[in-house]
Image: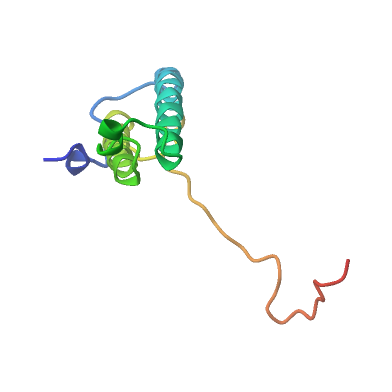
Length: 111
């Protein structure tokens, strides 16, 4: 069973806003380190700078990052009851609007 199989819609515990923010800051700091290390490994792999034994491993490949992302979502779900944006309650809702009406006759090629 993968950790991502246990992703849930409700947090396993209730946090106050201050607790949520404090944990989010700490977790995001740790993830920043992990992401930076993964980026270095990935770039070294692309440039052929890793030793052969490391090149043969999954570490630093896209599939490795996808597994990390799935586990991150499962962890966020269990601790915060949401997949992303762990500093605040609830998932944000994104609304996209077009600034141009299809019937407009604007010439966007002019400088």
